[in-house]
Every structure is written in structure tokens, then in C-alpha cells.
Image (tube, rainbow, N blue to C red; front, side, top):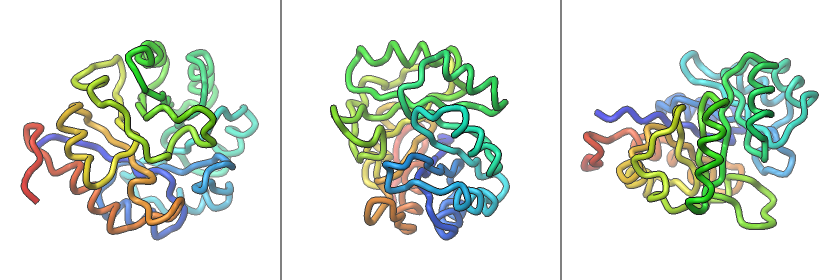
Length: 222
């Protein structure tokens, strides 16, 4: 069996956390970015993180956050990883990793071959990489826009650190994405929602099942 780990991002309720855990996802993502419909207060984030069962990695997503913001998040809730989803430089990634002693996942937008140089540069300092569709010019959100990118750009590639495929993944296309790219980790947010910021628990279960039901890179019959 191909071991594919799933991250479900943008959880907002205790029921969301329970659904993600029941589905067998590996990561639960909590968003701290005011422009996002998935944004959490520190109090709510703490409650959700405390509700996560052992084995479900708790990831806090921020966008170009300063130290004071990150200090408050790290102090408020138990975390397993920080996800930097803005324009953070390799130096900033290294500084965050050193300051908090937590693994750091750096998200990077991909639209064409030229974007892959930044992936390599960040692989020198980040613990994990998340490859997302580059948002349209002027977009309010750096991710969670439901957009895909040309998966052939990252197909069968290897970097210095583990990487995760994101961007427009849904229960209907994640198996194909895994087959084409050989990704061993995938991330979903809007693809399992009934409305922006509202998770559909049936879609979460379907997504995890589709992503993990693989053998030798070939989706099994459903």
C-alpha cells in the first residue's frame, strides 16, 4: 500500500476536529489569518488543539506573521508544527524554526517552472514544504482558493525535505493527483467545504479515503 498522509486545513469547530480524526487524517490545520473565512481566535484555536486526539498533528497556519503574533499563538495552544503561508524568506523560516523549536512547514505557490527555484531554497531551512497553486494577482488569500496548478511541474520530483501537494484538491481528483505526482502527503481545505469556512464531514471522510486508497500508485476500485 502507498502511505499517503492527509492534512485537512481550516478547521473551525470541535466537530471538524472529530471528523478529521475519525477519517484518519494525519494533520489538523488551524488558520490564524484575519482575511480568511477560516480564521480563528486564540481562544478557539486553543480549544480545538486541546480536543485533537494523540496522533493527530496540530498545525498553526500564519501569513507573514511577526514574532509577537507567533508568540501569542505558540503560548496559547499546544502545537506540533508551524505553517508559514506568506512571503517568508528562507532567513525568516530559519529564524522562526530557531525561535520556537517547532518544525516549520513553508508553503510555496507554484504556477510555472520558474517557481521551483524557491522550493529548493526553502528546502534548505524548512522541515517540510507545501506546494500550492499560486494565487491570482491581487487575491486576498494566499491559499484556500480552490485552484489547481499543473501537476506535471512537480511529478516524481524529490527535494531535500518531505513535501505536501495542495491546491484545488477534492475527493474527486486527489487520487489522480497522487498517481501523477507520486506525492506522499496532500492538503485540502476548500475542497471539503460546503461553503467558505464550513467543513463538510462526509467530504472529509471521502477525501481521506480517496487519497489513501492506493496501491502501487494505482487507485483501487471504490
